Length: 428
Ligand SMILES: Cc1ncc(COP(=O)(O)O)c(C=O)c1O
Image 1 (cartoon, protein in one colour):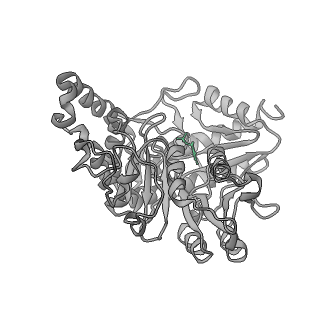
Image 2 (cartoon, protein in one colour):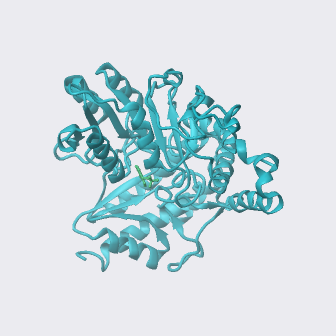
Image 3 (cartoon, rainbow, N blue to C red):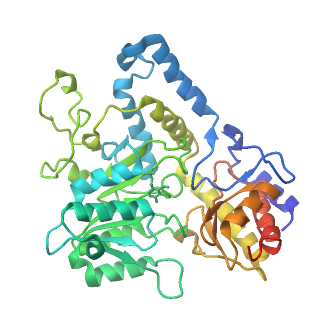
């Protein structure tokens, strides 16, 4: 594949890139002014619209002070409600099933307060062996909090010997055989390390058939792959917005609770003044007046300056639509995969993400046999202006993000990988 062919693909693609709507960091090395940015699975790029969205709230704060709660152009007291509909569209939920609040690990814990109800007979939590460490720590601490030994209560599922990714059918098969002691299944919709997209509906069904509650960490799935959380019957989910949702470092997170749980007053919940019915919130009652929406998992008054970037980003997702983005994502990631296969032949690198488009999102994880991922990532950046993400010891993650990545970026990444892997990093 030539550079000109990559540029032609960009020119002909049915969904032109929205790159001009983002700040693309300048390159500090290589032949191009802008970086080829492949780390949107870690931190998405800043939309140009973010600054105006933040400025609007700063201006209202300057102009109105405390009155902004009711009189800001977008009143702060109900600000989070504006995020409800676009978030529901993004994750395939009914509006009352979603809420934006806190950060991801906090939401995992809040969900587990309600949905991890262990008993001596059924207290196991099923996760992936390659679960993100925060999830692993969170479930272990939940098991310990309830008085169970985390080493015994937390079950970590590994891929088959010799394979790098879990197969969804192995998860469902395991649940059919051993699920009677599982209280909670908590898996990553798209695995952070391998980029594998699990079969969420099939695993959710298998978890339910085994009598377990099924929750999903969608950090790498939200804004990356189409989701139908309501129809799939998922019990609960949580995700962050700083990756594919481009809402800034440490940005606010989301949570989903299926409608069938919303009116269940028997669920244990931690409460704060934002859990109560907004119609009576300012009457300062000593007890919560429940609302039958995901809002009832909120605790604190929402951080408006953290929500403004999410609002700006969700508008962009609404404007393009997840289905069109996913179609482009499949084209881009497929192209990158083909190029990496070509350039990888005879070189110590191998894509470990599943090949089938419906088993992956945007990210391809490349194992560098015998090479140091940090050194390769640094050389990609300094020599070629390609920003990738290293997972020690030997994996490079590359995520072409359909809103701002181009076929030309993919060409740059593949040719840079070939150069760096064959060059002086070998053996370092
Ligand atoms: C899959 C996954 N889960 C959890 C987290 C932790 O997120 P936070 O620091 O927002 O709680 C991350 C962070 O990157 C993640 O990738």
